[in-house]
Length: 132
Image (cartoon, rainbow, N blue to C red; front, side, top):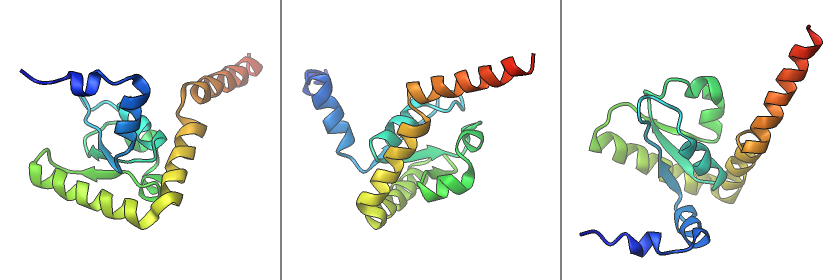
């Protein structure tokens, strides 16, 4: 038996505070999908660690921006690759400090929250409407 109550017995605020207290977050896809968890990690200021086989990550976050934030990628689903990416992400987090955390948070707030996405959709719809 696992003791899930230790975590899930906490309030939503307490669970978020626990999760956001970490420097990095491993974000694994189900089938090469770009998980919302990656944006949750950025919103919390964490450095996301993701596999290289996420199909559309480069379309959503250009590779240069991934290096700046950073987003750390690993090639193979092996313990050694994930641990190596984890160590790299920790080093980058410590190197960039508060400013890096702030940069990741602002990037997610400005472009990847629900209101920001709806705003983009409305803008595209308006642009399309002027072409009719």
